[in-house]
Length: 478
Image (cartoon, rainbow, N blue to C red):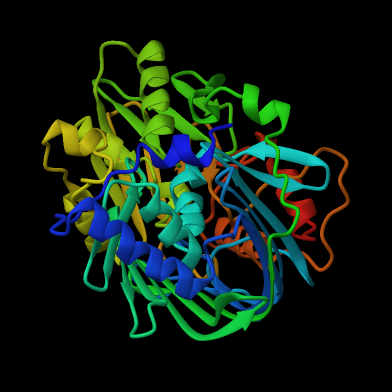
């Protein structure tokens, strides 16, 4: 675990410094005293309000779906650069529209950071989540006291009422002070696998004194221009016990996004798994088609490498994107950097054109380094790709509430269907959800209305299953 001093010694400051070091230090000490940050080593805040599932909108380029927060508890240890969020939330929309976990009732989430390790907790299990590292580092250091501690550990950070701070490769930010020397706004550029450089803002208001520490009772965040958090703080506890230890399995974990295994689903057809999100490689006469570039550059480049082990002498001509949600499109920039043409639904074509044209300066990715200009093509209801022997049909999943640009891929000769999020098979022998998920029902309706003869489903989460498993989940008797 990195100590606070070791972590912040590497922080880059992104605005020019005009005050000398002594004056800058004195100015920072004034701010630290106003906030009550001087003797603060840890803090716990509690509250409630709303969170918004970033990257999971129903329509590309629109606001993130909202969830109600019944309780929010954040513990921060500034000395060990650690953070733990525990959120109890419920759906705000009924029926649900857009992405995020499809659950009924209350849903508990635990997100943790320590140094350069990020992980999630469910039950007793800790799961490495390195893709969230930049965001959680921002959450920690953009707290009012995190801003001043980052600044005071650096080499001069203040100009008037503006403090510059950041973590290389994660984010760069400026904080604005109000007339009372309290942090009222943070504006940042954060690295994001989909958007490249993503704009993030935080506003703080209605400060109160909690045991000598000033803390805002109103916090609002926006990501990519849309609300991400609206929190009313009800309790603050300074200098709480906050021993946030990195679990052994998280310490020892290798990059989970580069683990790839392949299962041959048919001749020239490979189901590329090995993580939470899958892809499918389809061999054509003189090229390859890959269905789905999920998560981030690391995952996409691992899938590309795996595809080339199966088909070494043919280029990847097309990447079919199932829908615009960040976890399913985080690798599209890497495929674009390899020269693949993206195929998306017409509803999100312009969205993806903006994505592959966006800069990535905080952490230059594969596309930024390649210098390529990517092509994006759209599909409305159906598009057929064929080489005279193999036929690949790209079809819309119409009417599903998960996203309005959902595509599935159907191979009529092989009787194989590839889909994402409309159906994720549970573990074998798990009782079906009652009532069934409306997403499962929508997929069954689309298969039936479009007259598809399906034997096997290759879900982009989960495992390959026969069609009968979907019918069971959807409560359908064929």
